Structure formats: C-alpha cells, structure tokens
Length: 62
Image 1: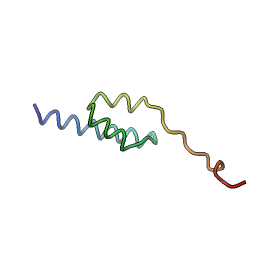
Image 2 (image 1 turned 90 degrees about the horizontal axis):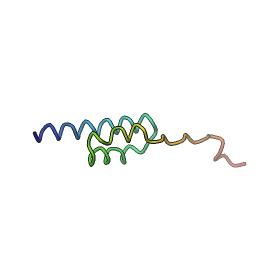
Image 3 (image 1 turned 180 degrees about the vertical axis):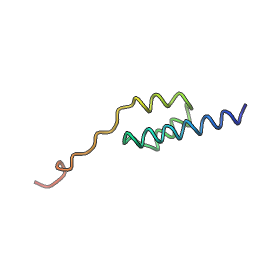
C-alpha cells in the first residue's frame, strides 16, 4: 500500500511541475503543493491562472 502512495505522490508532483511549466507558473510552488496534496493538486494546478507574459516594451527607458 505504501509504495502505491509514494508513486501516486511522485506522479502528482511531476504532473503539477509540467502543468506549471507549460502555463508559466511557479514550478517550485506547484511541486510542493503536489507533494502535500497528491492527486488533489492536479486540478488546482490546471485551473490556476497563468502568469501574464511581460510586455517587452514596458521596461524600456523612454
């Protein structure tokens, strides 16, 4: 039983990492959430708002 839980947790961490990476999210945060909550974290990672991409013209001196 314990190996199944460990594998499920590791797969959840990987899934959260991949979702966060594809949506420009904080990967470290979502891996920790996957570790703490297991498979329950995957839908939250998927439905979390992605970070807005920075506009390249915003930070240029004017």
